[in-house]
Length: 310
Image 1: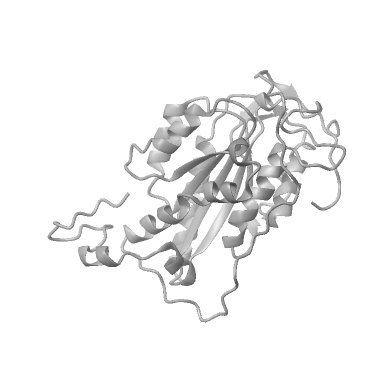
Image 2 (image 1 turned 90 degrees about the horizontal axis):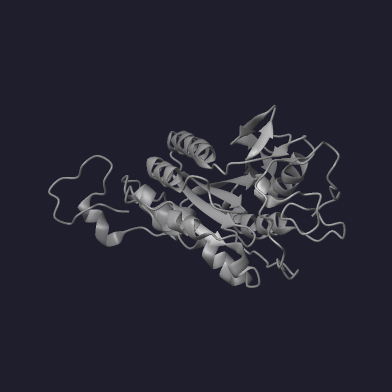
């Protein structure tokens, strides 16, 4: 995503001075320099996930306490990315559900604007099924993308005013392809200026070919999206971690470096090693994927919600 040519005689605004290119900073340089990575999460509540009251569907809560597909993905993937977020406070959005007769493509999950830790994300997710939603269609993520980009820009601007740096990662969990791939690709291109990486997690066994297209398509020349098929990595925690973090370091470096923003000097505070232990529970997602794309009315109190900490 770096458009700089070694032959340029002068450096246009927003581009890297040519004398920098031989000593490009690394992701580690920015992290050690105090760059913070915020995370926000968006969850698919469209009807194609199946009726959550029915065992075997993607949003069904198991009475034996074992995690469903979305819970496993949040625990595993958000658990990795959360290690880079300093305050462990995460906005959680939903999309694809009807409230008051209209499909809402970006709504708050949980009672608070930000969830507290990964457990808080899971609680916000569960709480959504107690709000009387109607799981509907289509699958539209552009509103969530625009909201995350706006928040990312504001966070970095506020940080920069204090001599700090902030970057944001949006994790989208969805059971299938977006309804308008071209519009989504155009939206990703339009927000590629933001200090934002987008990780799209495919849940279930749908055909995610068009979602991979979003990963590979970079109309703006700047790649901010990464698609991860959760099923493909479900039995290998290291593989899942690698797939999730595959492009974020490069995207973060390219964002700051292309704007002439060098890493800050390493913080004087004692550095803590980041250790993320893999889930002991074996992940088995061999379920029957429902094809029904119709609305699913989920009355308050009609879905079994397990209680207690995760």
